[in-house]
Image (tube, rainbow, N blue to C red; front, side, top):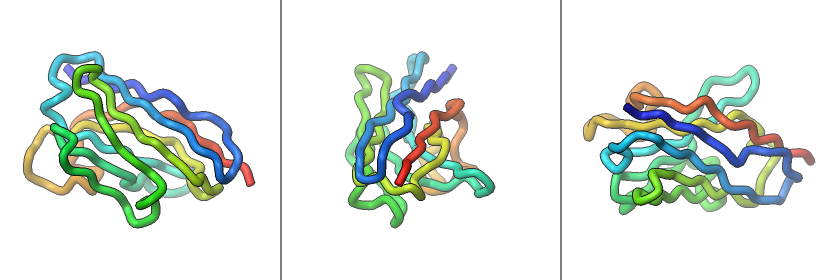
Length: 125
């Protein structure tokens, strides 16, 4: 069973950086594509980044490309999201998700099977 727990969210000033972590307590972590999504107040959940099972392939939304870096450590059952040059519009609840199927888009919310509870990132100007 997959149980995802995010951490690392906090209040940060614009221009700052932080690293989010998402740990899986199960034993099949390396089988999943892992994604990061975010949801700002009053908005729909949106794709941020994803990484393949081995970490060889990464995917980013245009809005975060160049500022966000997704990585994973399968030995630690953990996926990371390094965020730099934070902007107030990055304020959101960030959630990680696991996708088992090898088909389907890494960018699509509906393709992911398991979700964490989210961690709040607030960026002040």
